[in-house]
Amino acid sequence: MEEKSSRHKKARATNPPASAQEAVPVAEAASLLTDDLIVEILSRLPARSVHRFKCVSPSWRALITDPANRKKLPQALAGFLYSTFHRRDPHFHEFHFANISNSPSPPVDPLLPFLPSDKYLYVNQLDTCNGLLLCRVHMAPSSPSGDENTPVESHYIVCNPATGRWVDLPPHPEAPPDSFVFARLAFDPAVSSHFRVLQFENSDLKKYVTGVNVYSSQTGAWNHRESRLFEKITLFAGLSGVFFHGMLHLLGWLHHPLYMDENFVLVAVDVEGQVWKTTRLPSRGLGFGRIGLSQGCLHYASKVLPTVDNNKKKKKKKEEDTSLAAEIAAVWCMKDYDSKEWILKHSVTIAELWSITSAEFDVAAIHPDRGSIFLYSYDDDTLASYDMQHRLHRILHLEENNTAIFLPYVPLFSDSFAGADGQ
Image (cartoon, rainbow, N blue to C red; front, top):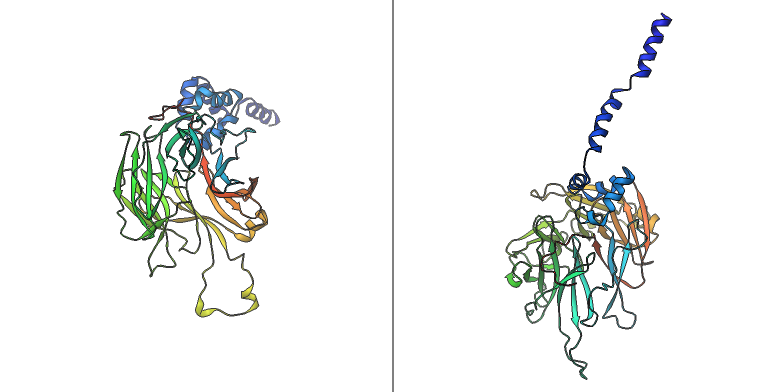
């Protein structure tokens, strides 16, 4: 019996497990893949997965980081372009970059040195979308003028900071009297190399959006469209938009006396300015946040304050205490875009976030590839990334006196940028 048992032990020792046997042909098959085929496969994966595959082997890391292959591969969020008020003249801004990548050197120079300084007197960075940057440039005067009130010519440009290419847009239509305008960028390189710029018109008198001017890089011309919103809505000019499903999404304020507690809405406009839609936000207007595209779905993150019933208010010390534990920061996800249904994805008490930031904060952005949100603190000029799922955080220190507007930047190394004539 002992001899028979010993034979079985030897058999078990010499025969590898089934999983190991299966791994051999898989490894052999992987070794047969050419570099071009691996890059083609990786180009169809999310940026986060491509980033993880750098750890497979030194050869894969070299393949993924090769400049020749970066043009085909999706890139992860590198950081945020942001601005500070000019110390001498607060009408102007100075531009900076908050680097969240592992690279010690930032992947973009916020000064945009490839733009001709003798041509552009001042460049204002307005919006980013899938690697492109929308700016409003103020032209240097062609001849000296002694009149300080002489208007400075300005127009929009769209550039790619990763490649140093840009395109000048023709003059946009003049805004109606008593109105102000702001522009946003719409671009998806997976669909087309062409981009759109949407310049919205908000009436100062009527206090709501009245129309949009749309520039198409395909036609090289501007077209005006009247607003097709049934409700009176003011769009927030100081927030970034989200281009998704061929629609530009923006946060707005609904003017309606019957819905004062639900007056924050999501406005979606197609790139032709023909289709306008509104969607209620999940926080019931009790908190104000940010929208973002993360892991292929539209997300909304905000601070939500507890609902107060005025009929049941009691002046007890227990209820007078600042209820940080009752306040939460929450992230909602629209998994089914067609249904317009928001699903609560993560939530955390503000007391917990306070232990990280040690200061008052606002939601600044949503990470496009991870379950993280970015929190901006006005008190100490910091930007904290907080992983809602794993409860991990990282704090970045910013320049003082910033404008609290953060433009997410994902490098685009591809040359597929229609109309770019800058060198």
